[in-house]
Length: 143
Image 1 (cartoon, rainbow, N blue to C red):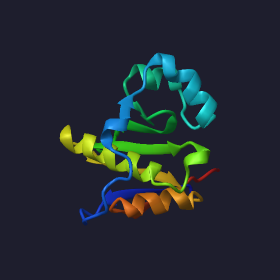
Image 2 (image 1 turned 180 degrees about the vertical axis):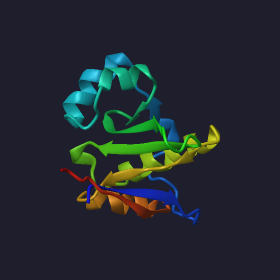
Image 3 (image 1 turned 90 degrees about the vertical axis):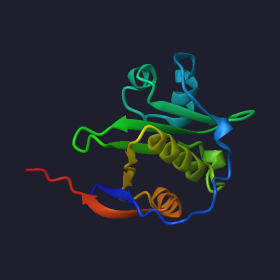
Image 4 (image 1 turned 30 degrees about the vertical axis):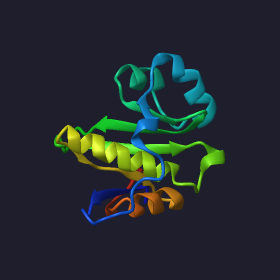
């Protein structure tokens, strides 16, 4: 097993802990901070920022990052993901980012389609608390 893929159950959920006003698009001047705080979580970071895919949740400091990706298979969907800065974990940051990205997708008339690595239990829990349910597993088969 490699990853869980989630769908929106449309059930009522608690509102985000952090307001949407704290979420903004990243720009190229943010790349070094993103790398410093998230390591190698984002691949092709400069391109992703240039393509307006990366978001930052911040106030007086950076709390976490979000991403919205084009889904090549399900063109009516957008892949969403988040990364919470380590010292802000377990405080509703990732959950807030996912709820705001879900809202952005819906505004653009896309369905949010988040996923997380199979072993990332905190991410899976955050996604479930946002009203998502894992219905598909991604398997990696090597020959």
